Length: 100
Image (cartoon, rainbow, N blue to C red; front, side, top):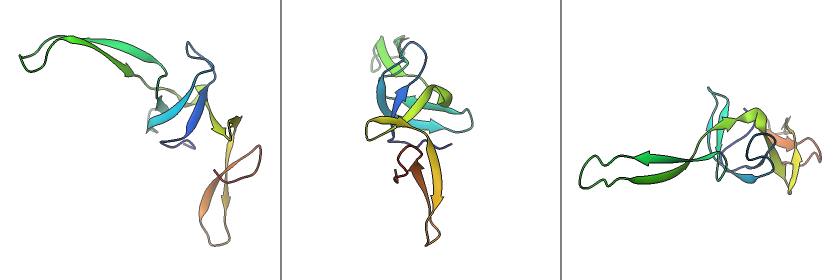
C-alpha cells in the first residue's frame, strides 16, 4: 500500500466526495484507510455502568484505498517509488517527480 498515516488525501467517490483529510490509520490487509472527518457515523451507546453513561459518539469508519488520492502540494497525484544512490527507497509524486 502506497499511502501512510499522516498523508493528506482527497476522497474521489462516495457521500464525502471532494472532502480532504489526514489519514489516521491504515489497514493494509483490508485495503482500507481511516480519514479524519470522512465517512463519519454516529454510534449510540447503551449505559453499561454508572461510570460509563449512555450517549452518542461520532467516529470515522474505514474507506477503500481506491476511493482516495494522495495530495502533494495541494494537488492530487499518483505515488511511485525511486531508489536513491545510497540504496534507500523513497516515495515520489508521479506528477512532479519530487519526493513525498
